[in-house]
Length: 346
Image (tube, rainbow, N blue to C red; front, side):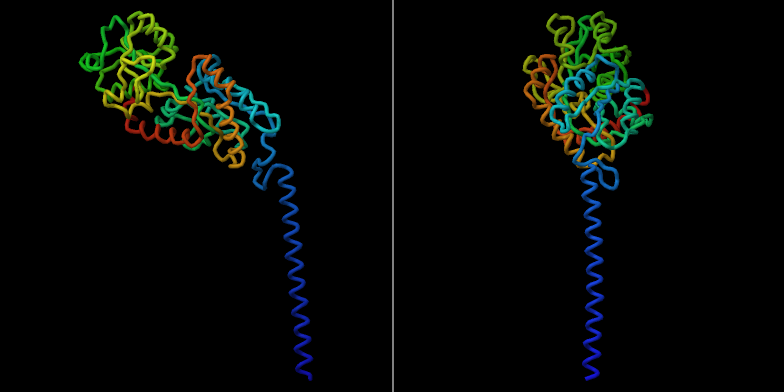
């Protein structure tokens, strides 16, 4: 009888201890859940990452160039449509932070709080020049990409006074004077790299902008330029410049007789001599925030009114998503690495 009584007493004690342990676990779970609810209501998790309430303030798009250029125009056309598809009655503004061939503006983007409220327009592959020369305040491969606004296709063109009409003539020339803006621009970078690849001995001559480079070619001060199709088309029609080839896979509809760089056997140059205007944000931005931005971007660039505005401005409408933008950045860096010494010599 004593043994049975002892066992019953021990079982009662154990049952009591288990009950206390279970109550403690339930209390802890309830407290944690309460904290989680408070986090969701405030729109931030324990790391301060924005969630459902994004955006909570004005969104800024940094254009790392002065106002009035192609990057500025692209950002200003996109801004109101991005705001249209973002939640919380979002406001999107554009701020021009020029200097250092984009280094200053992109440096600010890199240092911004990683909450998605600061975006930037990135020049791919042009902005990689600073990076591979180790003078950049940013790393383009670490950015969180939102999407490509557009891809601009380039054409090589000659001054009529140069008498150049085809690639073989350029290859046979002792020296070809090439008009560029600067080595960090897509036209300058693309011309130097493509000339090396194509076996053309070029001497580059810098100009304040593409307009000045074009005028220099028209006057005969330089022999060739490489610039976007829309920048040169008027001069082809007037006969002030002579188209040589396009940096495309297929022939351009408006120039069916113009050979492509693919036909000339150098398709690998297309991405290097093309201009991608990509939207990116600061490394470390939360995935929830990136999803909101990327979905809004996708809707914005496919908005019918936006497309109509882009085409009326004479620009290309060929956007792509964040994955394509990130891949373009990786491919651009990989393609440029072999030309580091060449770029350092310029």
